[in-house]
Amino acid sequence: MFSREDFLPAAEYNNIPTFEEQVHQISAHDLHTIGGLFVRHGVHDYLCAALLHRHIKMGDGEVIVHDGDEDDDISSARHSCTLDMSRLAPHSLFLHSSHGFRPFEFAIDRDYPELPTQFLHELQALLEARQLERVVCMAPLPVISQAEHIILETQLANEGGSRSQEQALTVINGGQRSTAVITNWAFDRGASGAITVREVKACVKNSFGVHEVTDSQIDIGAQ
Image 1: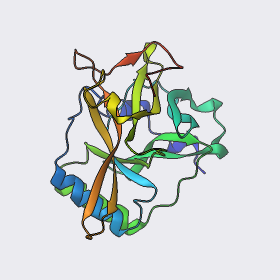
Image 2: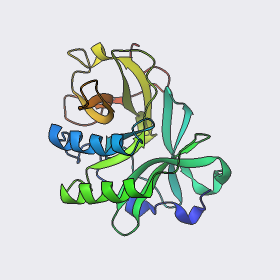
Image 3: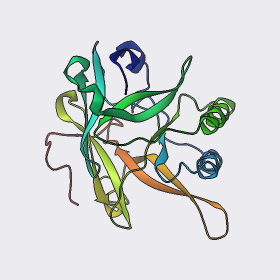
């Protein structure tokens, strides 16, 4: 269980690149190398690689918390004094400059297995060698119920946070949200033994190159 002292200070969280500031592409070679590490250590069953970014500015004493079902996830800033610490678990982890991998977002009532120490050491070395420590982070593997679907994350209005829901791939492949930026990748080992990379989550840019915002907190697009 975490204490409030374990939360990332607001100034450090706000130093994480925003969606608009972050690079929007990771090379296939780097993804396959990272994927090989995930598969070799067996964490690919519950973890994915993710594009390190934030959607909102966090205030002092706040923490980013994911709530709701895994297939309808809402993340928002909550004041730490309002949280039941016994119900919190890490959600997303990034490579902190002085503390190794550190959670920068949390989830309510979700399990998060303890990660193998050797995996963390090897991933840190890999990210530092490829200069990806400010680009790649780790997140839970999203639950996707159907083939040809993806998780789509849309920012809520008034900087209220973001909402992630399962959508058909046709929504982002040439559809009204064809400016999607892939932000999460799952890994596996194919029948030939080669590492496979699967796109599992995306954020969406609008025509101005910034994150798409929805005025609705109920419906972010056709399923």
